Picture 1 (cartoon, one colour):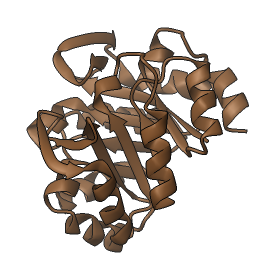
Picture 2 (picture 1 turned 90 degrees about the vertical axis):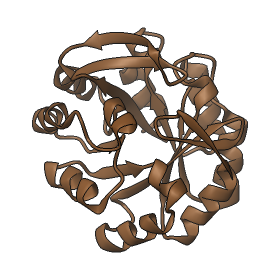
Picture 3 (picture 1 turned 120 degrees about the vertical axis):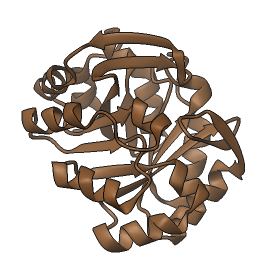
Picture 4 (picture 1 turned 30 degrees about the vertical axis):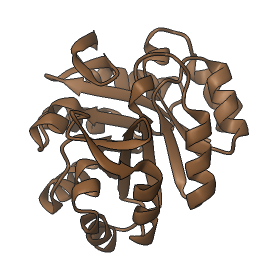
Length: 239
């Protein structure tokens, strides 16, 4: 199982939100690149970045912070938040980011993902599927669509997408445990690399995801609050 320490950025700072609420925010560092370098030193083999401002604005906002992170680490990076055009995809990949996560556009114009996979390859493009009560949410989680998460994942598979970051918004930043059941169902139904996001709170959560055959897990708040020690987690669940 691939582990992804998360670095969420707002106003150039490393932060965490609760349930995606911009008014419920904790700032962990004003130098995200230092956080990235620290996670790499602790054994991280992949990083997950989110441009929170970008998710709301619809275009990349924290590009300078992203550039600095790329310069200071040697491990691969994936990033999401406001990536809704070919130009934005090209720009992020051009910075040295390995994978870009496309969320809102995947719901509103799913054929865009097919086009991007065709141009940049299946390993460069990730579909971000964010769900509230099983229904897909868009635009920085501000709106809930009429499409079920499973339906969107199968549509993405048909378009050649290989990686999906699945976030259960109700659990994000809450340390309440990931939605193992829903994530396993998506993994089994699609056969895709479904990466669990939202709610990972302790080593037991990682154990349950691992035993369920889930291929990736994003860890945020639990790392920042020392509930999970990355070195130990990598040793147990990656190797």
